[in-house]
Amino acid sequence: MKVKIPVKVADHIGVDRSYIKKINRGIRRPSLKTARKIIEAMEGVVSLEDLRPDIVSLVHELSQKNETAGHATLQGRPASKE
Image (cartoon, rainbow, N blue to C red):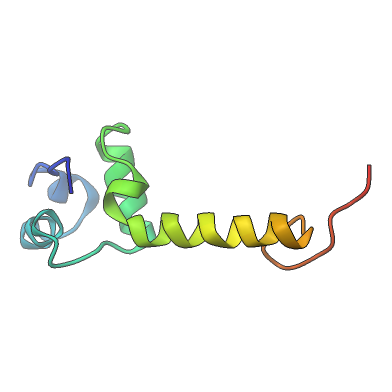
C-alpha cells in the first residue's frame, strides 16, 4: 500500500492498533466496513483502491462485463431504453 495508515486511526475507528499495523504491512485486508471508516478518518487521503484493490478490480471487471452484455446493473437486469 502506498499510503500508510497512522496507528492512531485505530483508536478513532475502534480497532486494535496491531490490526492497522497488519494492514500497513499487507498481512490483513480490512472489511469494506472498516475500509470505509479508515477512508473517512483519513479524510480521503487513502482510497478504497489503496485498501482493497481486489474489490475495486472485481467491481470494474463486473461493470465492464455488464456493459458488454447490455445490462444496466450488476443484478443482470436489462438496460432501460430511454
